[in-house]
Length: 106
Image 1 (tube, rainbow, N blue to C red):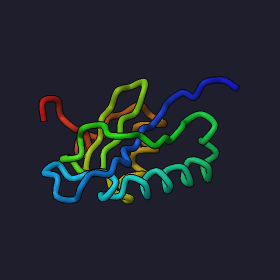
Image 2: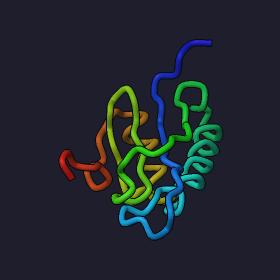
Image 3: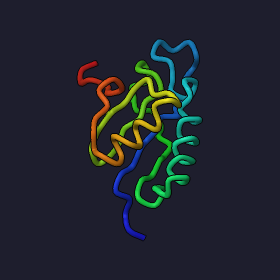
């Protein structure tokens, strides 16, 4: 089987709810991954793009976070409503979605 063209790592890390950064697990990380996998399969894209569970990406203060490789695009505060845009723009067109992008040194 050939390698995937892109990998999407979605944080599902669980921390104590009192942690100041919060955690992606409590901000919907698992549900995002599940829905993204479903959408990729529906669009027959699941053989070229792979949605993966990630442990802590250390960006939990930005909301549910993910990183897309090999592009190295980091997104934070991702919600279910953002997944179609991520597929259409970032996966299919290699575009960065600025309103989701975690800025350097943020």
